[in-house]
Image (cartoon, rainbow, N blue to C red):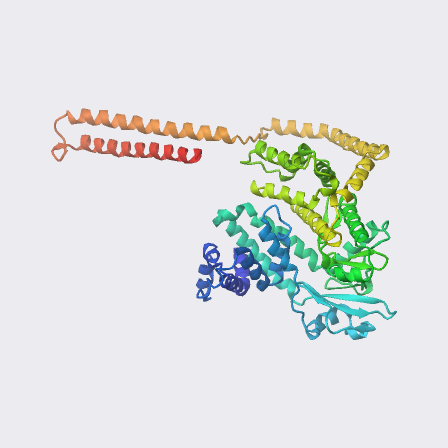
Amino acid sequence: MLLETLDTARDLGRLNEIAGVLLRHGFGDAVRRLGLADRLQRAGHVLNWEHAADLARIEPPVQVRLAMEELGPTFVKLGQVLAGRADLFGPEWIAEFEKLHSHVPALPLDALRPQLLEDLGAEPEAVFARFEIEPLAAASIAQVHRAALADGTEVIVKIRRPGIETTIESDLRLLARLAAMADAQMPALRPYRPQQLVRELARSLKRELDLAAECHNAERMAKNLAALPDIVIPRVHWAYTKKRINVQDFIVGVAGSDLARLDAEGFDRTLLAKRGAHAVLKMIVEDGFFHADPHPGNVFYLPVNRVAFIDFGMVGRLSERRREELLQLLLGLVERQPQAVADVLMDWTGDDHGLNLSLMETEIEAFVDQYHDTPLASLSLGGMLGDVTAILREHHLALPSDLALLIKAFISLEGMGRGLDPNFHMASEALPLLRQVVRARYQPKVMARRGWQTIRRALAVAEQLPHDMSKLLRTARRGRLNVGLELIHLKRVGDQIDRAANRMAVALVIAALIIGSSIVMTVSGGPTLFGLPAFGFLGFCAAVVGGIWLLRSIWRSNRADRDDDV
């Protein structure tokens, strides 16, 4: 409790700032319902409510996006995470969250020098043959400067913003508390799983704060794509790379968003779309390690129709089991096999509490079946995945975060491919690779290896079985064997029987009071009240009170049952 109090005191200034921003953007009701106003005012902070309704005419998604931009890097990153959760938010929200990829003002070099001196051991002008003072780009976590090494190699120097780690840690503590409060006090937000989203954000931010980890991701990606000579990943210069700084080759090419320049310089846009799509599909389907944010800002096109990917701070990972499930899903979509799609989605969502499974399966089968006679070249794989997540959203089901990231990457990839070539069809590009991977998984050598692994696991379980049985029997002999059964419906029946027994007991007591009081009334002598024998009168009063309580209890129970039926 003391530690939590200290953290709250330390974060109080930031909490006041967050509440002020929310008020300015029209979220005064949320501030009140979360109890932020009371906490801050008890701490002596004064909140200005006068302008809370100034932005009431702006749509809620825009209000949220503007508030996130003003609150800084943690909340910008939260918006970027939410941009990949089409299973939780509708298209109008996703469109606003995607705008949070915009740049932020850069810091002057003088503000970075103390940190650079610690990480490089000298001033940047002394370490590099050339170091440009003006930044090339700036984002919420880091900014990029162009430089040159002593051997003339052109590089970029990515520098983390000073002090940002402390701000982010404070924001994450506050977000964790706010998410818990929202779960408890705002039931309408529960389908959005606020606590799960905050945990996902924390994991993503901690990875992105480590700029050396980004370089490890880049090298792993380069190794995986070594068989594709037309794909370029920037080389890392480890002599200068630390947690707060990294140095990579400078990519000279055409930015992914500059399509007019591609035409002017004679690039083959159709070939670029195919090569980029093949690379990302290989990352996802074969390697299980993929660039999770392949938007045009992270892609460059190089001479001879090569494609370069940059910025590996946000990557996705898929286990072998997930990749097999993904293959089943994609093949089911492309080959129009509705039952295969329904089976995978039901496994992915997992939580079927309160869900009409047959209704959801019927909706998925109807959705996939509508593409039965559609030519492969006319299918939009990204659009189909978007529609599938919309079905999940309607049923208040959320995908695991790695799968939500994967679907976002697919949708971004297809959008970028269509931007390069209006006739680009992800389904046509994906199907050959999907079938190739499926064939590879069922080669005799691969099946023999999987079979041997299964046998080894089974043997390990069999080897451990006597020990486990012996332990179980010893526990049983000592009388310490506990069997837990969670039978919700039986518990409800038991509760009803318990209430009925209590009412029966009260009814018997009331009947006894009435009979006893009647007998007492016939006996003369003893104390009186209002001219009646006192004990008989009090007995009748107690019987009346008990009868009223019993009738009220029965009425409330019947009303609760009717509400449950509704």
